[in-house]
Length: 189
Image (cartoon, helix red, strand yellow):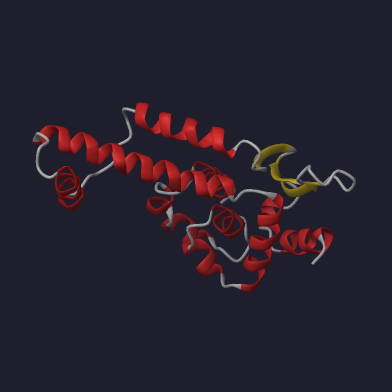
């Protein structure tokens, strides 16, 4: 499907209050094969979500460091994770140190999940995910772990006021860009 046709279909599903405020844009370089295309979602003519994976390795490092240094972030560690560290170390590490190691492993996992979510934000993946969005139900899009499916569903006119208001707890666990679009949608209710 061509970009213009896809854009037209996506914009036809926009919530009436967001029509004209939320735009899907793309640029590509026809004669430069080593340059990847760039795709972004803008709100009120400002680029909010840029889909380009040129700096994904740098973003992962920054994300892991930000997570490790964020004192407000509470990452729960369960007994099984501590036991896995104890088993790997053959029981020679003190108990308090086991908790620190288990937390560090969990932080690395969270950072890698964020990396995969961020790295998937490229023009080609946007087109694939947007096409998938047009063919699946709105419930599947809202329940998905994919950032773009969540965003496209949140600005969709088929998601009503009651459903938006009931999603506040779920949105606390989502990616910051998904939370941004959720707050945008709540602001127009």
